[in-house]
Image (cartoon, rainbow, N blue to C red):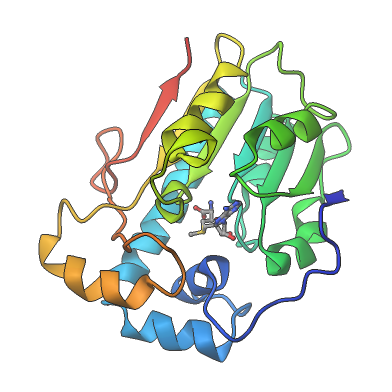
Length: 236
Ligand SMILES: C[S@@+](CC[C@H](N)C(=O)[O-])C[C@H]1O[C@@H](n2cnc3c(N)ncnc32)[C@H](O)[C@@H]1O
């Protein structure tokens, strides 16, 4: 495991995305301040969180079934079983996974994310997605970027505000994609109000404390299922 800032404290004075998401999923790793925000969100938010997590599981399983053996999952979240490594190593025990998150509470749970099969390996990097080159360099100690990698940015990029230069979300994603070999995949889900425009004002105001970007309701159609408008695309 590598940890960028090991002494970083968990800030319980304001809600954090990983902990609010944990509350929405019915987990136990959140604080009063996270629950208070979660309770203000429409009931739909819980369903969206579950559907997003289900999408992660379907997409990861599909990628492992296609023969992808290396996974780079950024914005991992607090472990909620089954986690990505359990899914893909259940299909291919030799699969290698690198998890990345910047929340100290996720770092505290990193051990649970690293219970790998003997044939495979899982690693955890404490880092911010705003630093794609650092993440790629550190992940490169465990993954071979000359071979296909499944990069996942699931329910993460809506926390990254639009901006100029290297901190812009398009620039960040572009830096990751440039590093991927042919045959790699990007799996990305992103909140949207497209299907519930009436909720935008309600959620935007309440989630400003966890993101500098307006909040989003998660979309729910993917690959012909009735749940998700997210996508998994092969890099060329
Ligand atoms: C809504 S959770 C999604 C968890 C998981 N990907 C899933 O879909 O089940 C978003 C995660 O992104 C992480 N995150 C938010 N901003 C981040 C950043 N700038 N760098 C790295 N991780 C970040 C949060 O800590 C949280 O764990």
